[in-house]
Amino acid sequence: MNMRPSINLAEKYQAMLQGGELKPDPHQALAIAALAQIQRQLEAVPPRGSMLWRLFGQKPDPVRGLYLWGGVGRGKSMLMDLFFDCTAIRRKRRAHFHEFMLDIHARLRAERKKEAGDPIPPLVEALADEARLLCFDEMVVNNTADAAIMSRLFTGLIDAGVTIVTTSNRVPGDLYKDGLNRPLFLPFIALVEQRLDVMALNGPTDYRRDRLGNAKTWLVPSGEAATKALSDSFFRLTDYPPEDRAHVPSMELDVGAGRKLMVPKALKGVGVFSFKRLCAEARGAADYLAIARYFHTVMMVGIPVLGPHNRNEAARFVTLIDALYEYKVKLLACADASPDMLYPQGDGKFEFERTVSRLMEMQSQEYLALGHGAA
Image 1: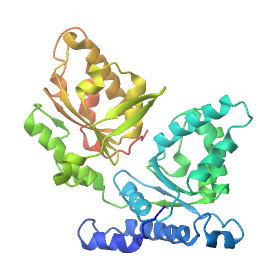
Image 2: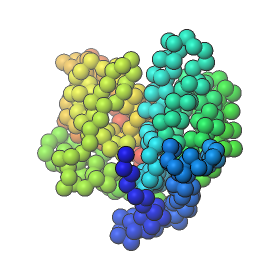
Image 3: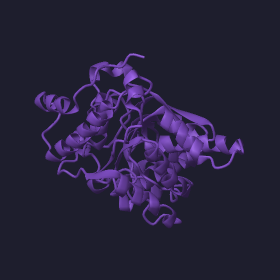
């Protein structure tokens, strides 16, 4: 397997500054210095199985990882992506944290079926064999199933020589705050603080919010102009070149129970959907929670006026908005009416008022400044 040459991360970052792709930010510069050190240490270890690796004589010391936390839009994901792309090692994996934990639970179920004892050690061994660098975006813990296994899982991975680099909106001590049976999770917090370098990225600029500028988040009426405005916001948020719009990647989102949801456009935590795909098809809370956990921003087109004539679609829309609101997902939408006129009359209008209130709040500057998954 041929591996592309290493790209010096610090030099790449400087080139992006000089080219106007990024703005000078002293907080980001400190993070780049820390990530560049990890890159140098990882690349200094000979590839497993090579002549130099065999001459090394013993397993090299694990490279200490990084927990990069800070407010929404400060560039954490961008910096980690840059680090991941520049680091020239064969065994590496980058994943959204929610996606990774879904994979972990699926593997654990498979191990338990073997009835061969504790499923954690063979899982750790398999993961360590697949990657010696694991990069996670948006580490957030909001369920007991994840909390119960994370300390043993990540202790095993680090002991096996895997380097962990992760981003989060929260300081380690605030992970799973007020969660059920939180004492079970406290060893993981101690692990992060002892075995990873913890760095804050809390510069004054919310780049994600800055990219939105004064763009409206609820566009009325639906149509060509609204769709174009939403498209422009997508390209600003993702830094994707508009001239290459025909090649925006799609993805299949795992929503649990072996089911997948096709996302027609998905990039850097931004997902684009149609109302028809999300609310006219038979979907439930599990689908919407998976979307809310994975995407920090959801764009939705084709929202019609709702009422008794499409009560099933309206009920699904209510459940969707509840999930997005719970995880503080940013919603940019094209609709046939403003939120207060979206369900204008008929049976169900009173029950829809809570959704109207949430839709209005989700357009506020205070809501847009919140981090994904913030309590």
